[in-house]
Image 1 (tube, rainbow over the protein chains, first blue to last red):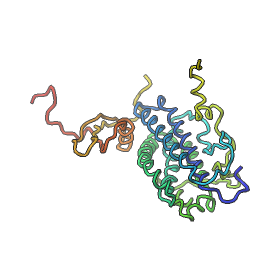
Image 2 (cartoon, each protein chain N blue to C red):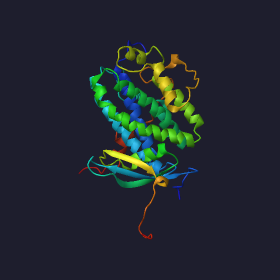
Image 3 (spheres, each protein chain N blue to C red):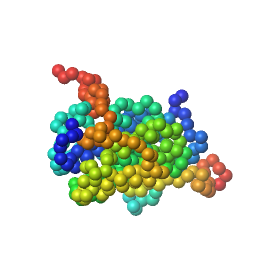
Image 4 (cartoon, rainbow over the protein chains, first blue to last red):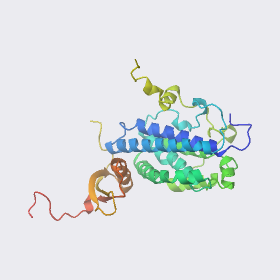
Length: 240
Length: 73
């Protein structure tokens, strides 16, 4: 997967954005009774709802964006960053995801909302308003929490997710579908978070261009069942 | 008790909102946060369930009270 095909369609990029948004929303929601303050619990729940809502809009836009570059729709093709594969165990991981990864996804939404694809121009603008508050939350907590190693990991995975120069993001930018290219996305991410992008050495030969990551693996069965609603169905009364 | 304050220094903010342009802003609640950024994020997360056309926050320390219930007025 991720090799041997020509130019990927916009579909794959938006599908990956939707997958990440859905998982990020779920991971935020997992902290809605575990954050350090009651206010942060409420914010985690609200941001989780936002991101799950954003993923629904993005999934709903897919059929107007070309054809899938991978066939099956299961855990193996869930195109999410490794950071979201497993539940977070530390608040610092929440903070780093909120400050860095969420900002990377927002910048891609901004690039799509200001590109020339009408369905995305019209549907994505509201997300940017909501994401502003995610950014404020992440930035403030980043000042407070000691999230060094989690920040480094979130940075690496954000850069991997944006992808190498001269790959699909740059091609989509040349076609006007994205307002920013890969280099600009990295620069804007550093600017938004404050400071310059850390020097990160990525082995792009290992990059899976559909799943937008170098690390193998993916979400576990429990996460997949949660996302597909199967986990809830276990607790539903049987009919009859 | 698990819900402890983790920030060294926090401030109280009053939250004001209105649903239409013609009605006055009114206080809908308050939030506690270490800085303006987080106070904005918390105000929006906590009080955004209604369709406000406007919302703002004010540091409680900036409010000058003229009189209040129980005082000598």
